[in-house]
Amino acid sequence: MSTAAGRVRTAILISGRGSNMVALIEAARAADFPAEIALVAANLPDAGGLERARSAGIAAVCVDHRPFGKDREGFERALDEALRAHGIELVALAGFMRVLTPWFVTRWQGRLINIHPSLLPDFRGTHTHARALEAGVAEHGCTVHFVVPELDAGPTILQARVPVLPGDDEASLSARVLEQEHRIYPQALALVASGAARLENGAAVGA
Ligand code: GRF
Image (cartoon, rainbow, N blue to C red; front, top):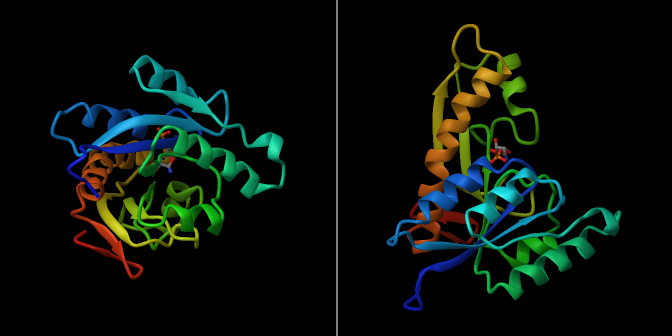
């Protein structure tokens, strides 16, 4: 994606604490990182990550989804407007807890990525760590993928695996996975922003 014009203007969308957001902001401090974090947007005003973004000197806005009720696309139009107002070219979802409609996903196709705390296609959706423990898998992990209209079904850019250890509970397993999320999300963002990884005909190329 990277052009002669410089670093790719990237927005991070969050709903909560924003630890992946912080990992991306820190990686993007390097002068040779191909993406610039130009905006953080949350769908809830009390998302802890908003304050963390502001203290890192990043523009941070809230587009509250609640006044839109069931009008998901209305919320997404407002969000899209904020992204365009900041000249955003690439969007990274980082703990963003809203399902996006085909309208938004199609509009940002190939320029919209997400991190999911499982080895997709295993454990799409929520409560992935509890479900992994219940299923008794030996390995668990996380996936960065391009977003497509079907939930958690987009092509993989990068994955990291961790062992599930005897005595693990949700907290210990999620902490082990989160450490890997913070490692691979910046790498995946760099791959997409530099154009090394692309979405072509529904598949991830160069990933
Ligand atoms: C992460 O586990 C991410 O994979 C999932 O939501 C969690 C967000 O954590 N989508 P944080 O807000 O980045 O700390």
